[in-house]
Amino acid sequence: GRHNIGVWNWELEWFPEEWRRYCEVYDEIWTPSTFTAASVSAVSPVPVFVVPYPLAPEPAPLEALDREALGLPPDAFVFLFTFDFQSFVERKNPLAVVRAFKEAFPEQTDAVLLIKTGHSDADPAALDALLDAARYRNIRILDCILSREAAYRLFDLSDCYVSLHRSEGFGLTMAEAMRAGKPVIATAYSSNLDFMTEENAYLVPYTLVEIQRNYGPYRRGAVWAEPDIHTAAELMRHVYEQREEAAAKGRRAREDVLTLLHPQTVGERVRQRLLAVAQDRGVPVPPGLIPG
Image 1 (tube, rainbow, N blue to C red):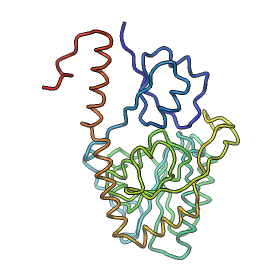
Image 2 (image 1 turned 120 degrees about the horizontal axis):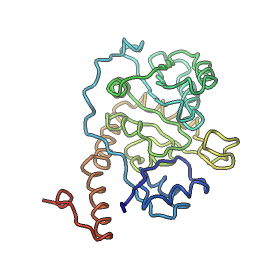
Image 3 (image 1 turned 90 degrees about the vertical axis):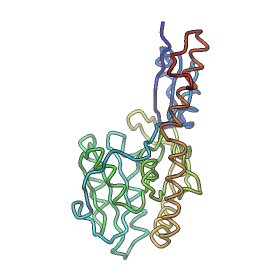
Image 4 (image 1 turned 180 degrees about the horizontal axis):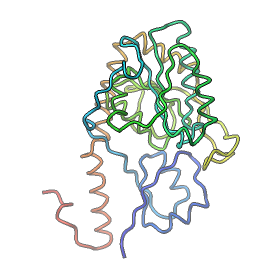
């Protein structure tokens, strides 16, 4: 007797047919991106709507974390990437970021790559591979769980965010870096394109490749992106050298992402959808949903 809404995320163009039966217990599905909506819609027997994750203009008060506490040189140009091993290292693709950084900076000592990880106990072998690849000048691996306030502080302490993901269901860390006014270098594929353009980010070309074996729910035979490492390296070098341009792009990124993902903007989308549901079901509309 209720209108049940499932709020789902998914990261591939392909959506498992066997999950269709889970759609059927809902009246509609909300996804955070057009990419995910297209994937779920291909299977779902119920309507699918896009309701992105909102970003507050300013996060909660940041922790008093500084570069010294993280072992980062005070004057270095810091590239940042963060991911969680529970989200599958093959999809997040941190080794591509390491490879691009090494290609971009074979000699410079004032460029640093910081990779923040979490829940590495989910894949100890992948952590070992990352640590082995990161045995290079000016690459730091921070493997721990931080408070949300400290995690936000990492964006402030960095100069550029890099995500060479193979596919994303939303791309929250990229959006958070943009909110912090940082230039972002990212794979030009999947859900991050809802809020990233050539005007507010540095987009990396890619080729679609078949997944060669199963990685958790990501099945062999489906496709995801393989970002161009050489172009990513060129963009990292460009941001390092053209800092005023990169800073301007970061300011544009903050403006754009807060326009698209401001809580009031997302809240209005939710309000309009719930009003439509109430109208379709012929139920009274709560006064709070009607503009005053």
